[in-house]
Length: 174
Image (cartoon, rainbow, N blue to C red):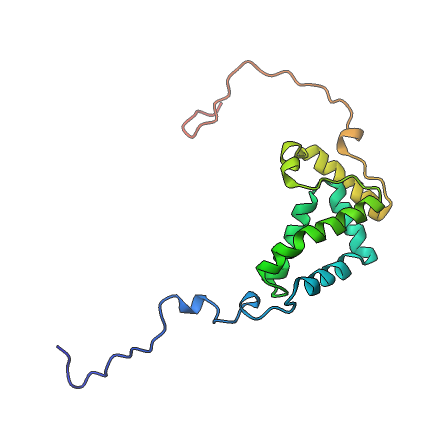
């Protein structure tokens, strides 16, 4: 039973966890998109990828073995998350954007993989990735990167002792 002097309970208090979420319309994808049509969004991406620096970066990414469809998907998904266009427009422009990137790679005579299904079968190994990164660093800096394996001389192999070494918590020290 409630005492007459107690204040009435407030029913307009925030819902638990409400402070951890953004208000409605607070995220870019919750507002109207900047580009409403597929033509507008595609024109934005074509302008974006045809800059000299962007073409160079894109070709480097394709040389590393990243499939064209993965590159296009990451670009357009970022556009949806930034509120540039809707997810529907993303789905519509992806094939045309992939063809544009493929034609740029063809013009530069770069080998590329169109679909990521092919990339899963022939995924690059860690060594191939490291060699690709070194190649990019050499290309950017003009300095040849020498691998530690190239400069290492053969070190004499130490013979192992046959005595078992006890290293446990309760082992005796000798």
